[in-house]
Length: 82
Image (cartoon, rainbow, N blue to C red; front, side, top):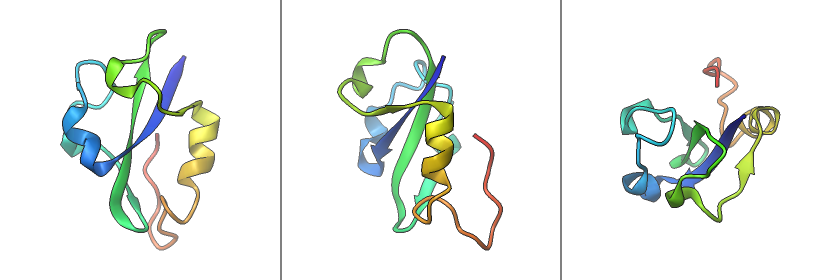
């Protein structure tokens, strides 16, 4: 089951990209309001990567709800799929 975790932008350096679906910092999607202060990673694993332990995990449907907010979506531009 795919899981999503929101992290602060200053935590990106702690991400082990071998343990998440994104391949690098360049493939992360950041929030738009305030711009670039948060991002999220997703992973398909029964075990949470250690650098994400203790953080809130979201299901796909929960994450869709989160990114539909003004914090994550600019209504003048279409969003990217998860």
